Image 1 (cartoon, helix red, strand yellow):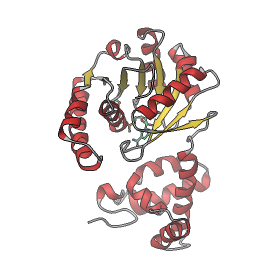
Image 2 (spheres, rainbow, N blue to C red; image 1 turned 180 degrees about the vertical axis):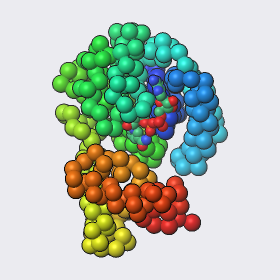
Image 3 (cartoon, helix red, strand yellow; image 1 turned 180 degrees about the horizontal axis):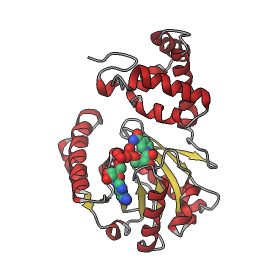
Image 4 (cartoon, protein in one colour; image 1 turned 90 degrees about the vertical axis):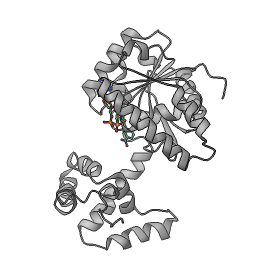
Length: 285
Ligand SMILES: NC(=O)c1ccc[n+]([C@@H]2O[C@H](COP(=O)([O-])OP(=O)(O)OC[C@H]3O[C@@H](n4cnc5c(N)ncnc54)[C@H](O)[C@@H]3O)[C@@H](O)[C@H]2O)c1
């Protein structure tokens, strides 16, 4: 571990990403307070942590029953926001709703010591849309993880014009401490680096398939062979699940809305959502 001031961490929201961030952070040796809104949600968190333990055992090099048990022991679940607010770093992973994120940071700002750093894991909102609600925009930034954090271990760090550079650097060091590869953004960018690259590629692949320009397999093969990438864009879409690109396209231009309609008619309405349902652009046994 590097010489970092962040020693304790809280994660708000224990859904898909929150549970992964909390588990990974605990796995790397930090005590973690995992906060959610109800006992029912925390029951769900317990199940997610148990499943993550099995996944780490199977997929993470060097994971043993002892290291996984130690990670589980560092996780403390609570519905008390005041308890979560005591951490050195609070990472927010609540649903992607601006008002909800703002009200969460407003409450947190009133409860946390002045030294606490706040980070949002938001995929589509900019930190400058949220930071002022916390009452400490200088200690506020985005720390954005990718789904399956133990495998796809980028952590994009993106501040606002108001973020203290020392806070930014501390969060970059923390990201490395928990086994992520920190990706530093010098200014705000919707979609960060990853989705700024990925979303246009995926949308172009959908447009090629929807327009009947080439077969699904040939679109992917072209990308794999010509760039050396392990997966083609339509294979990636099947892994993400087709509902997410559908939702993104419905918010886009007129051409995007037509692609959304095509996805809906040919895949979503038929329950063909990708790997999770056994069929999307490809069939899965
Ligand atoms: N799912 C992904 O692949 C992914 C990837 C990167 C970033 N993100 C971002 O992470 C955030 C969470 O996404 P997710 O997919 O984990 O969502 P999710 O729906 O799986 O989980 C959200 C969790 O927040 C809890 N919650 C609801 N209201 C709350 C509140 N007021 N305070 C605290 N917790 C509350 C819910 O009970 C639930 O456990 C979003 O901002 C999303 O953009 C998601």
